Length: 192
Image (cartoon, rainbow, N blue to C red; front, side):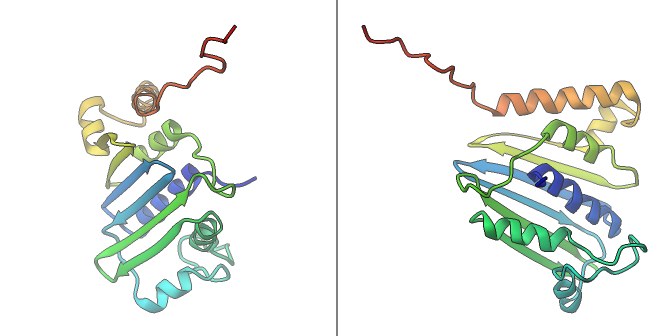
């Protein structure tokens, strides 16, 4: 099973929260066949040596997940982008945070599928802790944006079952609005 773009977003945003970020800015935009994503946080950041180690699949800091002996998230993401004609960058500064930016050429046979955007965005907006997640989502010029603080102000406790259903519906309707209507096969009249 190959991870989807949404699986990758879950992993990178979760890493940002676990690095002590109080704010994470997530951007996901598609223009033509290029899907560009960025996760910028104000967490503890990394020095150059730690950044190099973070891209080594056989290294983990041992703090977040003490039982793990490897850290595959960023190395795997970097390889996914390379194999699908995309790009990957990791910028970080101690005390200032980290930005992970990546893209995929969606016309490439090795590009991952997008995945469950409403489910992913709902899960990210309800991730436990005292932080704010800002989401900016676009498709060929159409877009929407929202923050977890705005959603909590409007709905209240985002972990309540009814509010989870409302969040999923909010993201489902926004994602639907971004997607062009599918063209039915044989929609053109047949020539006689």
